[in-house]
Length: 151
Image 1 (cartoon, one colour):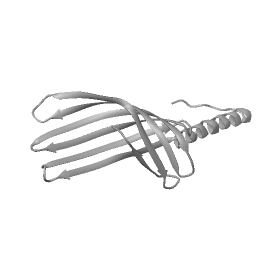
Image 2: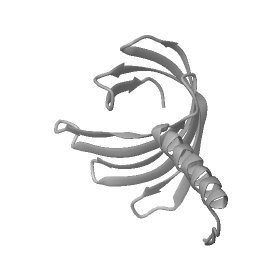
Image 3: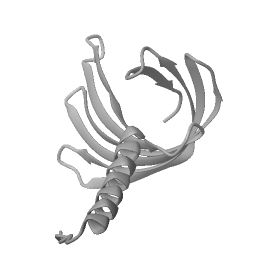
Image 4: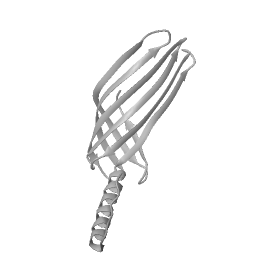
């Protein structure tokens, strides 16, 4: 971080103008950032099975059509005495191909990599690559309900 020393009024005006432009650029850039995520829990008592998953998500909208983001996922599965813990990261690029005032349809191109750890066993790697269609329903200016199919 540096400091600028402005000695006359013209330099001060130019410095304030540059500062204003930088702050305006940062404010516009911050408007494109979005956060979200998903959470699920499942219990099947007849099979003695329990699953838990949490996947926070962050992304950036470049414009109305294109976005770039990533999900970080953690899941824990229990099935008849066996435990499986999984950790994954799934970056994606999102193309929104239809949008009106309330609904937006999109397609995510995703490549995921992760690790599974089974109780009393070695850690294994896994990967996924593919397309994931989705729909976003705008609830208000700050929140949307999003559903995706795949992975």
